[in-house]
Structure formats: C-alpha cells, structure tokens
Image (cartoon, rainbow, N blue to C red; front, side):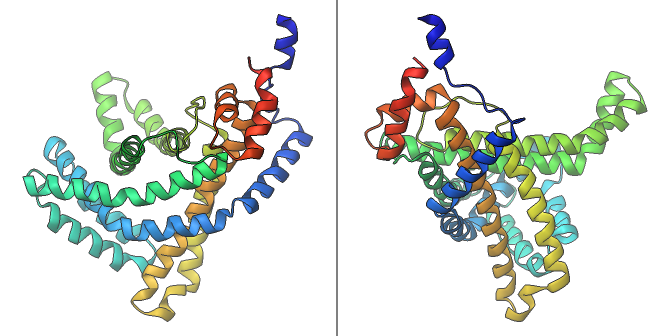
Length: 325
C-alpha cells in the first residue's frame, strides 16, 4: 500500500522533457488568454501610476532614515540614476515626483515624515492589491478565507517589503564597489575578493529580484502552497522583465513615442512600461499556479477543500488529492 501511494504521488516537472515543456507552454498560453492577463496587467498599470508618488514618498522616507543611520546619500543617487538611465521622456516626471516626496518627508525623522510615510504606505498598497487579485485569478480562488485585516496586512507588508527592496537594491548597485572594498579590507583578502565581489553583485541583484518575486507569488494569493526561494515563475518573470526593460528602453530612445503628446507623453511612456511589467509578473504567477496545481501537495489539498475555488479547479484538485495523502 505504501509503495502504491508512493507511485501515485505527483512527480516534479521534468524540464528536460520536450513533450512536458511543450504541454506546459500550451496550457500556460491557454490560461493566459482565459484569465485575461493583458486586462489584469492594464489594471495593475493604472493603479501603479496613481501609487507611484506614494511609493516614492515611502521609499524616500526609508532612504532618509538610512541616510541618518549610515550616511549613505540614497536619494541623491536615486536622482542620479534617473538622470543617467531613465528614458528621456520620463526623467522630468520622475525627478518632479522625487522632489515632491523629499519636500513632504523632510529629514525623515519628524512626526510629520512618519505620518506621511504611513499614509504613503496605505495609498501605495493599491498596486500590490491589484497584483494579489490577479494572483487569486491565476489559482482559481476568491479572497474569502482571509479576513479584511489579514488581507490588508499582507498587502501593506508586501508594499513595505518592495519599498525596502528598492532602497537596498539601489545601495547594492550604486555602492557595491565600496562595500566590496570595505569587506576586502576587513577580512584581509586583498584585491582578489574585491574583484570577485564586483563581478558577483550583479547576479546577486538579479537573484534578489527573483527572491522578491517568489515572496510576492507565495504571500499574495489566498492559497496554501510550498515556498521556494527561487520559483520557476520568478525566474521566467525576472528574465523576461530584464529583456522587456532593455527593449522598451531602446524603443523609447530611438522612436521617442511620448514626444507627440507633449507633457502627457512621459506619463504614457511610464504607463506602457508598467503595463509590460504587469504582463511579465502575471505570466510568472500563472506559471507558478499551473505547476503548483499539478505538483504541490499543499496547493492541491487546499484547492480540494476550498468551497470558493473555481469548480473546475476544485474538481481537478479533488481528483488529485488521493495522490498526496
């Protein structure tokens, strides 16, 4: 009997099998269309545009506190990064948002700055909330098992995590060379470690993006599931997002699509980039959901007993549940 159950237990995805990969790709494309991912991505972009000022206020507040604690000028280097790397059509808009955020936050230590950060956290969570709704659609569930307080707490926590990540990633990329030199001096490993650190900090930053997406994909949907630090969906989404970022940057640099719209052009360019970002992030969530519903015992058991789950999804899970018990 034990051997029989072991044989019935769902196997992991065999990524070396072309047939399995093709089958998964076809199913992913079908789910992409069925769940109307492009429409969900448009909703994410819409909410994110209105949430960006709040998120930047929150990030600037965190940066100001980091500056007080470490004397690292994060805000100044954020503006430098915008001027050096942001598309020309969006530089003025982003710099204006950062300047307004700095004016609201001040030195980051006052009661007013803390209140502004808390309000910004609440307002900025709308974009993460849109992602959570889309994640639930990917798994075929509704937001019924979590209370309003628990769901809002999850949304606020993920929003704060994203703001912290933005600051830490900026510190790693901007000050990575100095950090590597300091570590090398403290440990006494010389220039070899410094060179190695400066090579590794870029793949480390990419790994950090994958990890933050894995946390979003795990904590966002209202479903029980196993937690991998690096999930297939986060890997695919990170790679596609890096490619999409480069392609959008080249397209904007050469064709300047926002120039025809004057001042509004920068907003349209930003909205388009967020739309592409939403498609990529939601595609990763759809991939994780397909794999979890097929291979993750926790997800299968949870879907089988969820009355609010999509009937087809729940029926399929109930058929599979005996394989994981």
